[in-house]
Amino acid sequence: MKPLTVLYNPQARKGRGLQHAKTIEKYAGPDCIYEDITKIPDLYTYLLEAPAERDIALTGGDGTLNFAANALYKKDLSRPLYYYPAGTGNDFINDLEKKQNCAPFPINEYLWGLPRVIIGDEERYFINAFAYGLDGYCCEESDRLKAQGKDRSYTLIAALGLLGKYKPANAKVTVDGETREYKKVWMAPTMFGRFFGGGVKMAPSQDRKNREHTVTSVVIHGISRIHALILFLKITAGKGEKYPKYLDYRVGKHVTVEYDRPIPAQIDGETRIGVLRAEVFSGTD
Image (cartoon, rainbow, N blue to C red; front, side, top):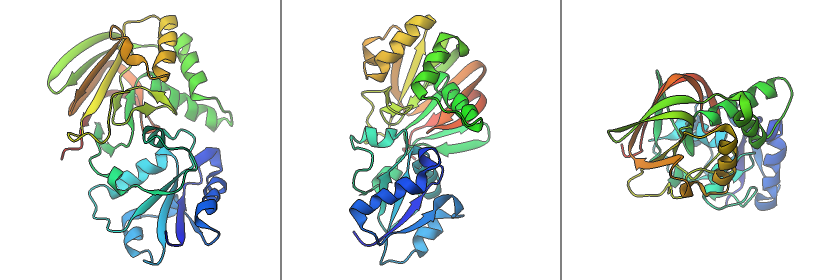
């Protein structure tokens, strides 16, 4: 590896992005240059014009990866782009079975074949998951608490939501033309990786490297609050597929989710408020 220019997200690790980015020096040595990725107006142009004698590494979490994926998707990037995991959720590296603060590794291959979600006029590619329902509520609540200078874990927010703060709704989910209607839906994520929510193993059989680039639609439905809480703990441990009565797993290339009232959602951890309908296309285009 050549001397590194490190692109960091100052908001990663609860505002300590630069501090954690500098731990990369245990692999790259002290000759690193640090630049705030949020101040780069065009990441693709930046990478094209960056000096060839230095390698480029991203550092941060899943949000940083999502930003890079949307900036670089379908662009011809001839140079390697490295990634040094230093976020809080790290669902991407969990999926790759790597550890936080592992040695920087090239991620070019993971920025292709990504699924995209359309919500109204917005279209975004995602690295891990588009999650609709309780997970969106968790991101919305986390954002609200952070704005107040407070902090709670995803697991605690989800537990409180399941115990009364979050209200499920009815939903209609269509996968590759087959529509199913559900009552009392707690979550309806569409997964490209296996994890979301900072380590929740929602789709144990999903493979982001599968040749068809398919995604996995999961619907958690028809269950009481207390049983949903117990089931959530099972899902976190990757045992959700053992409960087909309450978790409907379907694999496909085109997923549409429609709720009967506005519901919060998230795209790789970025909150979207009041979503009625979302459409996901696999990365086969």
